[in-house]
Image (cartoon, rainbow, N blue to C red):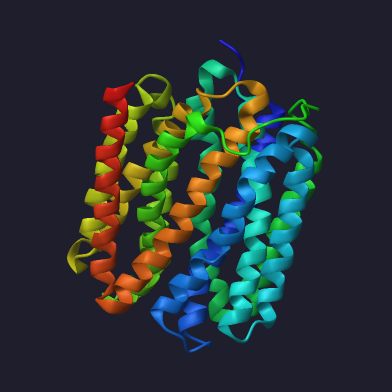
Length: 371
Protein backbone atom coordinates (compact mmCIF):
# COMPACT_ATOMS: atom_id res chain seq x y z
CA UNK A 1 0.00 0.00 0.00
CA UNK A 2 1.32 3.47 -0.93
CA UNK A 3 2.64 5.65 1.90
CA UNK A 4 0.30 8.41 3.12
CA UNK A 5 2.20 10.13 5.95
CA UNK A 6 4.92 11.93 3.98
CA UNK A 7 6.68 15.18 4.89
CA UNK A 8 4.56 17.10 2.37
CA UNK A 9 1.36 15.69 3.82
CA UNK A 10 2.51 16.69 7.32
CA UNK A 11 3.46 20.22 6.23
CA UNK A 12 0.15 20.75 4.42
CA UNK A 13 -1.77 19.53 7.44
CA UNK A 14 0.24 21.85 9.72
CA UNK A 15 -0.45 24.79 7.39
CA UNK A 16 -4.17 24.00 7.46
CA UNK A 17 -4.08 23.84 11.26
CA UNK A 18 -2.66 27.36 11.51
CA UNK A 19 -5.12 28.74 8.99
CA UNK A 20 -8.23 27.15 10.48
CA UNK A 21 -7.26 28.02 14.06
CA UNK A 22 -7.26 31.63 12.88
CA UNK A 23 -10.71 31.06 11.35
CA UNK A 24 -11.85 29.43 14.61
CA UNK A 25 -10.91 32.55 16.55
CA UNK A 26 -12.97 34.62 14.10
CA UNK A 27 -15.92 32.19 14.29
CA UNK A 28 -16.15 32.80 18.03
CA UNK A 29 -15.28 36.49 18.16
CA UNK A 30 -17.22 37.91 15.20
CA UNK A 31 -20.86 37.40 16.37
CA UNK A 32 -19.99 38.67 19.85
CA UNK A 33 -18.14 41.65 18.39
CA UNK A 34 -21.08 42.62 16.18
CA UNK A 35 -23.73 42.24 18.90
CA UNK A 36 -21.41 43.64 21.63
CA UNK A 37 -19.08 46.56 20.84
CA UNK A 38 -20.89 47.38 17.58
CA UNK A 39 -24.33 47.17 19.29
CA UNK A 40 -25.98 45.54 16.28
CA UNK A 41 -28.57 42.76 15.89
CA UNK A 42 -28.38 38.98 15.61
CA UNK A 43 -29.36 39.28 11.95
CA UNK A 44 -26.40 41.63 11.44
CA UNK A 45 -24.16 39.06 13.11
CA UNK A 46 -25.35 36.40 10.69
CA UNK A 47 -24.89 38.77 7.73
CA UNK A 48 -21.35 39.67 8.82
CA UNK A 49 -20.48 36.02 9.43
CA UNK A 50 -21.62 34.93 5.98
CA UNK A 51 -20.53 37.96 3.94
CA UNK A 52 -17.20 36.38 3.02
CA UNK A 53 -19.13 33.86 0.92
CA UNK A 54 -20.11 36.50 -1.66
CA UNK A 55 -16.56 37.17 -2.87
CA UNK A 56 -15.43 33.62 -2.22
CA UNK A 57 -18.34 32.16 -4.18
CA UNK A 58 -17.65 34.37 -7.18
CA UNK A 59 -13.94 33.55 -7.19
CA UNK A 60 -13.87 29.82 -6.39
CA UNK A 61 -14.27 28.67 -10.03
CA UNK A 62 -11.66 31.22 -11.16
CA UNK A 63 -9.17 30.13 -8.51
CA UNK A 64 -9.87 26.52 -9.45
CA UNK A 65 -8.83 27.23 -13.03
CA UNK A 66 -5.79 29.22 -11.85
CA UNK A 67 -4.78 26.36 -9.57
CA UNK A 68 -4.67 24.02 -12.56
CA UNK A 69 -2.85 26.56 -14.75
CA UNK A 70 -0.21 28.16 -12.49
CA UNK A 71 0.02 25.65 -9.65
CA UNK A 72 -1.10 25.31 -6.06
CA UNK A 73 1.57 27.24 -4.13
CA UNK A 74 0.96 30.77 -5.54
CA UNK A 75 -2.68 30.61 -4.47
CA UNK A 76 -1.84 29.13 -1.07
CA UNK A 77 0.55 32.02 -0.37
CA UNK A 78 -1.73 34.71 -1.77
CA UNK A 79 -4.75 33.42 0.09
CA UNK A 80 -3.05 33.41 3.48
CA UNK A 81 -1.65 36.91 2.90
CA UNK A 82 -5.12 38.33 2.14
CA UNK A 83 -6.63 36.54 5.15
CA UNK A 84 -3.94 38.02 7.42
CA UNK A 85 -4.61 41.53 6.10
CA UNK A 86 -8.38 41.18 6.56
CA UNK A 87 -8.13 39.90 10.12
CA UNK A 88 -5.53 42.48 11.16
CA UNK A 89 -7.60 45.37 9.78
CA UNK A 90 -10.70 44.15 11.68
CA UNK A 91 -8.92 45.58 14.75
CA UNK A 92 -9.81 49.06 13.47
CA UNK A 93 -13.39 48.31 12.30
CA UNK A 94 -16.03 50.34 14.14
CA UNK A 95 -19.17 49.76 12.07
CA UNK A 96 -20.97 46.96 10.25
CA UNK A 97 -20.20 48.12 6.67
CA UNK A 98 -16.46 48.04 7.43
CA UNK A 99 -16.78 44.57 8.95
CA UNK A 100 -18.63 43.36 5.85
CA UNK A 101 -15.99 44.86 3.53
CA UNK A 102 -13.23 43.08 5.44
CA UNK A 103 -15.17 39.81 5.37
CA UNK A 104 -15.45 40.18 1.60
CA UNK A 105 -11.66 40.56 1.45
CA UNK A 106 -11.34 37.48 3.63
CA UNK A 107 -13.51 35.67 1.11
CA UNK A 108 -10.98 36.38 -1.64
CA UNK A 109 -8.22 34.84 0.47
CA UNK A 110 -10.46 31.94 1.43
CA UNK A 111 -11.25 31.22 -2.23
CA UNK A 112 -7.56 31.01 -3.10
CA UNK A 113 -6.34 29.06 -0.08
CA UNK A 114 -9.14 26.53 0.26
CA UNK A 115 -9.27 25.50 -3.40
CA UNK A 116 -5.49 25.19 -3.69
CA UNK A 117 -5.20 23.29 -0.38
CA UNK A 118 -7.69 20.60 -1.40
CA UNK A 119 -6.15 20.25 -4.86
CA UNK A 120 -2.70 19.90 -3.24
CA UNK A 121 -4.03 17.25 -0.85
CA UNK A 122 -5.39 15.16 -3.73
CA UNK A 123 -2.03 15.55 -5.50
CA UNK A 124 -0.15 14.27 -2.45
CA UNK A 125 -2.47 11.46 -1.31
CA UNK A 126 -2.39 7.96 -2.86
CA UNK A 127 -5.64 7.56 -4.85
CA UNK A 128 -6.65 4.39 -3.00
CA UNK A 129 -6.27 6.18 0.35
CA UNK A 130 -7.96 9.47 -0.56
CA UNK A 131 -10.78 9.08 1.99
CA UNK A 132 -8.27 8.36 4.73
CA UNK A 133 -6.16 11.34 3.64
CA UNK A 134 -9.21 13.62 3.74
CA UNK A 135 -10.10 12.35 7.21
CA UNK A 136 -6.63 12.91 8.65
CA UNK A 137 -6.01 16.21 6.88
CA UNK A 138 -9.40 17.58 7.91
CA UNK A 139 -8.41 16.99 11.52
CA UNK A 140 -6.48 20.23 11.16
CA UNK A 141 -9.65 22.04 10.11
CA UNK A 142 -11.72 20.78 13.01
CA UNK A 143 -8.88 20.93 15.51
CA UNK A 144 -8.54 24.55 14.49
CA UNK A 145 -12.28 25.08 14.92
CA UNK A 146 -12.11 23.28 18.28
CA UNK A 147 -9.07 25.17 19.61
CA UNK A 148 -9.84 28.52 17.97
CA UNK A 149 -13.04 29.41 19.90
CA UNK A 150 -11.60 28.78 23.42
CA UNK A 151 -8.50 30.71 22.38
CA UNK A 152 -10.77 33.43 21.02
CA UNK A 153 -12.70 33.50 24.31
CA UNK A 154 -9.49 34.01 26.27
CA UNK A 155 -8.24 36.69 23.89
CA UNK A 156 -11.54 38.61 23.76
CA UNK A 157 -11.62 38.76 27.54
CA UNK A 158 -8.36 40.68 27.21
CA UNK A 159 -9.49 42.65 24.13
CA UNK A 160 -11.02 42.09 20.71
CA UNK A 161 -7.93 43.53 18.96
CA UNK A 162 -5.84 40.81 20.62
CA UNK A 163 -8.08 38.19 19.01
CA UNK A 164 -7.90 39.71 15.52
CA UNK A 165 -4.12 40.22 15.62
CA UNK A 166 -3.48 36.68 16.89
CA UNK A 167 -5.60 35.27 14.07
CA UNK A 168 -3.63 37.36 11.55
CA UNK A 169 -0.32 36.10 13.00
CA UNK A 170 -1.48 32.49 12.57
CA UNK A 171 -2.19 33.17 8.89
CA UNK A 172 1.34 34.52 8.46
CA UNK A 173 2.72 31.36 10.10
CA UNK A 174 0.65 29.34 7.61
CA UNK A 175 2.25 31.19 4.70
CA UNK A 176 5.72 30.40 6.03
CA UNK A 177 4.83 26.70 6.24
CA UNK A 178 3.50 26.69 2.67
CA UNK A 179 6.90 27.85 1.39
CA UNK A 180 8.43 24.55 2.49
CA UNK A 181 5.76 22.37 0.81
CA UNK A 182 6.75 23.26 -2.72
CA UNK A 183 4.57 22.86 -5.78
CA UNK A 184 2.47 19.67 -5.73
CA UNK A 185 0.66 19.92 -9.05
CA UNK A 186 1.70 20.06 -12.68
CA UNK A 187 0.49 23.35 -14.15
CA UNK A 188 -1.27 22.89 -17.49
CA UNK A 189 -1.05 25.27 -20.43
CA UNK A 190 -4.39 24.19 -21.84
CA UNK A 191 -6.16 27.14 -23.43
CA UNK A 192 -9.63 25.82 -22.73
CA UNK A 193 -10.89 24.52 -19.43
CA UNK A 194 -14.23 24.69 -17.65
CA UNK A 195 -14.81 27.04 -14.76
CA UNK A 196 -17.39 24.58 -13.40
CA UNK A 197 -16.67 20.85 -13.26
CA UNK A 198 -20.23 19.74 -13.95
CA UNK A 199 -19.94 16.08 -12.85
CA UNK A 200 -19.09 17.37 -9.35
CA UNK A 201 -22.26 19.47 -9.00
CA UNK A 202 -24.78 16.85 -7.71
CA UNK A 203 -22.60 15.68 -4.80
CA UNK A 204 -21.61 19.30 -4.13
CA UNK A 205 -25.27 20.20 -3.61
CA UNK A 206 -25.53 17.54 -0.90
CA UNK A 207 -22.33 18.82 0.73
CA UNK A 208 -23.81 22.32 0.62
CA UNK A 209 -26.79 21.33 2.77
CA UNK A 210 -24.49 19.76 5.37
CA UNK A 211 -22.40 22.91 5.58
CA UNK A 212 -25.39 25.27 5.63
CA UNK A 213 -26.69 23.40 8.67
CA UNK A 214 -23.35 23.20 10.50
CA UNK A 215 -22.47 26.78 9.51
CA UNK A 216 -25.64 28.01 11.16
CA UNK A 217 -24.65 26.16 14.32
CA UNK A 218 -21.17 27.74 14.30
CA UNK A 219 -22.63 31.22 13.84
CA UNK A 220 -25.14 31.01 16.68
CA UNK A 221 -23.81 28.43 19.14
CA UNK A 222 -22.10 31.03 21.36
CA UNK A 223 -25.28 33.14 21.49
CA UNK A 224 -27.35 30.00 22.16
CA UNK A 225 -24.99 29.08 24.99
CA UNK A 226 -25.49 32.54 26.49
CA UNK A 227 -29.27 32.07 26.33
CA UNK A 228 -29.11 28.75 28.17
CA UNK A 229 -26.91 30.18 30.93
CA UNK A 230 -23.68 28.30 30.13
CA UNK A 231 -20.76 30.00 31.85
CA UNK A 232 -18.34 28.73 29.19
CA UNK A 233 -20.03 29.98 26.03
CA UNK A 234 -17.43 28.38 23.73
CA UNK A 235 -18.16 24.88 25.13
CA UNK A 236 -20.65 23.78 22.39
CA UNK A 237 -18.21 24.80 19.64
CA UNK A 238 -15.34 23.12 21.44
CA UNK A 239 -17.24 19.85 21.89
CA UNK A 240 -18.41 19.95 18.28
CA UNK A 241 -14.86 20.38 16.99
CA UNK A 242 -13.36 17.91 19.47
CA UNK A 243 -15.91 15.27 18.46
CA UNK A 244 -15.02 15.65 14.79
CA UNK A 245 -11.29 15.53 15.53
CA UNK A 246 -11.57 12.41 17.69
CA UNK A 247 -13.99 10.53 15.43
CA UNK A 248 -12.03 11.30 12.25
CA UNK A 249 -8.84 10.01 13.86
CA UNK A 250 -10.52 6.81 15.06
CA UNK A 251 -12.59 6.14 11.91
CA UNK A 252 -10.20 7.56 9.28
CA UNK A 253 -10.35 4.45 7.08
CA UNK A 254 -14.16 4.18 7.02
CA UNK A 255 -14.72 6.53 4.02
CA UNK A 256 -12.53 4.27 1.83
CA UNK A 257 -14.55 1.18 2.78
CA UNK A 258 -18.13 2.41 2.30
CA UNK A 259 -19.97 3.80 -0.75
CA UNK A 260 -19.53 7.58 -0.45
CA UNK A 261 -23.12 8.60 -1.20
CA UNK A 262 -24.61 6.11 1.29
CA UNK A 263 -22.17 7.32 3.93
CA UNK A 264 -23.00 10.93 3.07
CA UNK A 265 -26.74 10.32 3.46
CA UNK A 266 -26.24 8.76 6.89
CA UNK A 267 -24.04 11.70 7.90
CA UNK A 268 -26.72 14.21 6.87
CA UNK A 269 -29.39 12.37 8.86
CA UNK A 270 -27.12 12.54 11.93
CA UNK A 271 -26.49 16.27 11.38
CA UNK A 272 -30.25 16.88 11.23
CA UNK A 273 -30.77 15.03 14.51
CA UNK A 274 -27.95 16.94 16.19
CA UNK A 275 -29.33 20.34 15.24
CA UNK A 276 -32.79 19.50 16.49
CA UNK A 277 -31.21 18.56 19.82
CA UNK A 278 -29.32 21.88 20.02
CA UNK A 279 -32.64 23.73 19.80
CA UNK A 280 -33.59 22.39 23.25
CA UNK A 281 -31.72 23.87 26.27
CA UNK A 282 -31.33 20.55 28.09
CA UNK A 283 -29.80 18.82 25.06
CA UNK A 284 -27.58 21.61 23.66
CA UNK A 285 -24.39 19.81 24.69
CA UNK A 286 -25.60 16.40 23.46
CA UNK A 287 -26.73 17.95 20.19
CA UNK A 288 -23.32 19.55 19.64
CA UNK A 289 -21.68 16.13 19.97
CA UNK A 290 -24.23 14.38 17.71
CA UNK A 291 -23.75 17.12 15.12
CA UNK A 292 -19.99 16.54 15.30
CA UNK A 293 -20.50 12.83 14.61
CA UNK A 294 -22.47 13.62 11.46
CA UNK A 295 -19.94 16.17 10.21
CA UNK A 296 -17.16 13.61 10.84
CA UNK A 297 -18.22 11.60 7.82
CA UNK A 298 -19.96 14.18 5.61
CA UNK A 299 -16.96 16.00 4.14
CA UNK A 300 -14.77 12.90 3.42
CA UNK A 301 -17.76 11.11 1.89
CA UNK A 302 -18.80 13.91 -0.43
CA UNK A 303 -15.28 14.95 -1.41
CA UNK A 304 -14.49 11.33 -2.29
CA UNK A 305 -17.57 11.32 -4.53
CA UNK A 306 -16.59 14.68 -6.06
CA UNK A 307 -12.93 13.89 -6.83
CA UNK A 308 -13.89 10.51 -8.26
CA UNK A 309 -15.33 12.51 -11.17
CA UNK A 310 -12.08 14.39 -11.94
CA UNK A 311 -8.87 13.61 -13.83
CA UNK A 312 -5.57 14.97 -12.39
CA UNK A 313 -5.68 18.06 -14.64
CA UNK A 314 -9.28 18.74 -13.50
CA UNK A 315 -8.65 18.64 -9.75
CA UNK A 316 -8.45 22.39 -9.40
CA UNK A 317 -11.73 22.81 -11.26
CA UNK A 318 -13.40 20.08 -9.17
CA UNK A 319 -12.07 21.67 -5.98
CA UNK A 320 -13.27 25.09 -7.14
CA UNK A 321 -16.73 23.74 -7.95
CA UNK A 322 -17.08 21.96 -4.62
CA UNK A 323 -15.71 24.97 -2.77
CA UNK A 324 -18.26 27.25 -4.41
CA UNK A 325 -21.01 25.11 -2.92
CA UNK A 326 -19.16 25.17 0.39
CA UNK A 327 -19.39 28.97 0.27
CA UNK A 328 -23.10 28.82 -0.46
CA UNK A 329 -23.53 26.57 2.54
CA UNK A 330 -21.21 28.25 5.05
CA UNK A 331 -22.19 31.74 3.93
CA UNK A 332 -25.84 31.30 3.02
CA UNK A 333 -26.66 29.06 6.00
CA UNK A 334 -25.80 31.65 8.69
CA UNK A 335 -27.49 34.43 6.72
CA UNK A 336 -30.70 32.41 6.25
CA UNK A 337 -30.75 31.17 9.83
CA UNK A 338 -29.92 34.70 11.03
CA UNK A 339 -33.15 35.96 9.47
CA UNK A 340 -35.04 33.07 11.08
CA UNK A 341 -33.47 33.91 14.46
CA UNK A 342 -34.39 37.57 14.05
CA UNK A 343 -37.99 36.77 13.07
CA UNK A 344 -38.50 33.94 15.56
CA UNK A 345 -35.64 32.89 17.84
CA UNK A 346 -32.31 31.03 17.79
CA UNK A 347 -33.81 27.60 18.66
CA UNK A 348 -36.10 27.89 15.63
CA UNK A 349 -33.10 28.84 13.49
CA UNK A 350 -31.19 25.75 14.64
CA UNK A 351 -34.21 23.52 13.96
CA UNK A 352 -34.43 25.04 10.46
CA UNK A 353 -30.83 23.98 9.94
CA UNK A 354 -31.92 20.45 10.81
CA UNK A 355 -34.60 20.60 8.12
CA UNK A 356 -31.97 21.65 5.55
CA UNK A 357 -29.80 18.67 6.46
CA UNK A 358 -32.77 16.30 6.24
CA UNK A 359 -33.54 17.60 2.74
CA UNK A 360 -29.92 16.99 1.79
CA UNK A 361 -30.19 13.44 3.06
CA UNK A 362 -33.16 12.77 0.77
CA UNK A 363 -31.31 14.31 -2.20
CA UNK A 364 -28.26 12.12 -1.54
CA UNK A 365 -30.36 8.96 -1.34
CA UNK A 366 -31.92 9.87 -4.68
CA UNK A 367 -28.45 10.41 -6.19
CA UNK A 368 -27.29 7.05 -4.90
CA UNK A 369 -30.25 5.29 -6.45
CA UNK A 370 -29.87 7.10 -9.77
CA UNK A 371 -26.20 6.10 -9.95
